[in-house]
Image 1: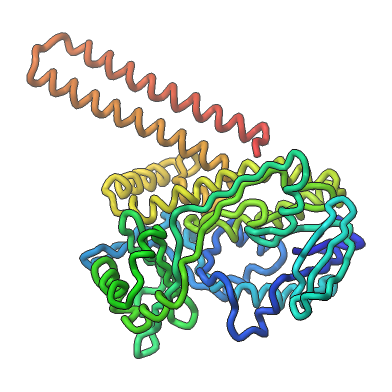
Image 2: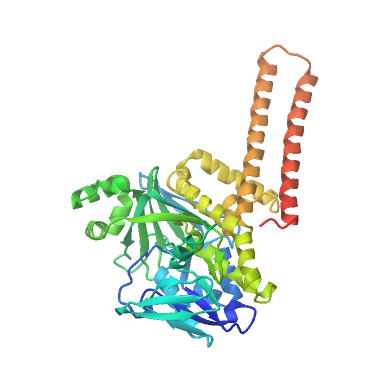
Length: 467
């Protein structure tokens, strides 16, 4: 979390800031406790980084991934591209390395001071008073004051806990029934990648899945997502190896039995949480990132949404000349509906990744979407492209996806009706041809009417500035 003190300009990114971190400085730690799942940087996050001159620094630390590589049970693979254009790729970045680079760049700014090992115990949202407990001396507490408190302290936010005590604050959290364990796929004996590096590798197995993202050191950060009750059945080296040999045989060969058993049995499955709340502000405090909208990691948008929060907050500070009393309510109004939308989309994408990517209907829909996108690039944009490679608000992405589903369903009905009519005309009694022509015209007219009405609604929402 950080605070802005003695605001020097309208933009908080240029204000005098002091930042407090609960953990020690990870740049000096030999081993960092916490998540190690790689992060996927895409258009929204890159846009925010570009605005503060950090894009090139961060992109240089990652590896482009242009498609999903699907690993079938018979050990065959096939790619599913993310998009149709050369710039349609996401970037795999090591979580620790990203934090180290950003901390170093932030610390180099003359208006930024970093304080590590400070746990926020209590804060007054209206006076800006904060009470910290020092990690190296649990009996010592430090009191600080700030003009504004920005809580970006994660899914278990202490600033959000203070908001929970305020009347009118709405909060909802959900732990899903699936957890995850982190593994490592090492480089080959020749020091090369064990799999093609420019892919997000997925082993979809209906109710669970294994994924692997490339690292600069030629390894892959490999993560197993699975129901907790399934994890509880794997408690010995034999059951773990047998499970992987049956469900992920090619992955087992790459990870190695010894390394698999050590990593799998050496830790407990971690949980996954989604958080929705409203509003994002009270008094002098506001929450952003996971503190405001923690989500499951299956759309790769958690970091990107957090970076976008920073960009939008800074834009509002410019727009309202640094008036926090106007900025904070407007931030909630614009961002809350979109945050809830991406939380829901992230949950849906888990089903897509572990199950739908292996279905024929999904692959057909993917081809249809890409075909229509090439024909009508400004009208028909696939859902993944909207979410990952554009700045279209998340809520608008969902609305357009529903419109696309309606159009395709009507198209399928027209196709089926035509087949039935032609079959009847070929094999049944033959009424006048004019009857079939009129029926077809009527169906097509209804379809295009629905298409025009839906598009008008979408365009109207854009014109009136729907968030």
